[in-house]
Length: 238
Image (cartoon, rainbow, N blue to C red; front, top):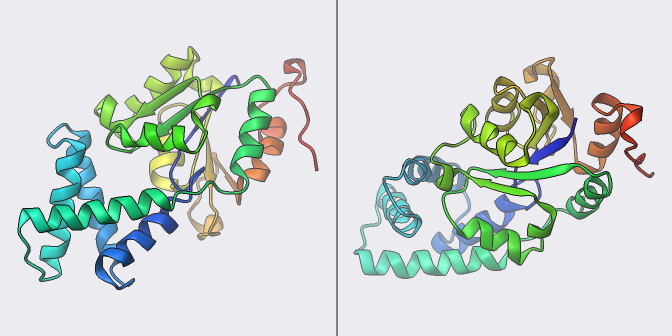
């Protein structure tokens, strides 16, 4: 095992808390989060496919979401509201407490690291830079730049190519069982599901997918499952 690929949102960065708080700022209620996620998935997929640029995607997504709520607004008003939501969300980004210690350990262990994210545009690079994460990664693979998204094998293979490793020598870690873990496994990588919510892991997890509850467990898992003694990887502390 020579490399680790990591999802970003809800793996290293607490995306949901910031995005959900920003949506509350937009509409003044919290019960529409599942509907927002559904609309977002639809429009992000269109951006990844090249049908929409990221700015247009965000405006059209928000307008479609509000229309579905029965709120009919002109484009100028929607843009003002979306800019307000985006500003609020960007102010709310925070790393999970376990992110930096885990990244520090993996860099000290000499592992190659790639960020593999289904984001749609350059804003994801700005987020990584703003949170001080860029320095950890040898490669950053963004769906909106590659033109395919997880679980498509191509995005995982692109990360491996940029790291100059074979998929069988890489581990991918992410918070989505379907997109991250099973997608990576099907692409030939080792798969780790970061299940922070303890979401029915025993019932749904394939036997060839490892499960951790937070990133403090990742170093020990990497050492016990994937690293041979000759690699000289330091043992995790604590």
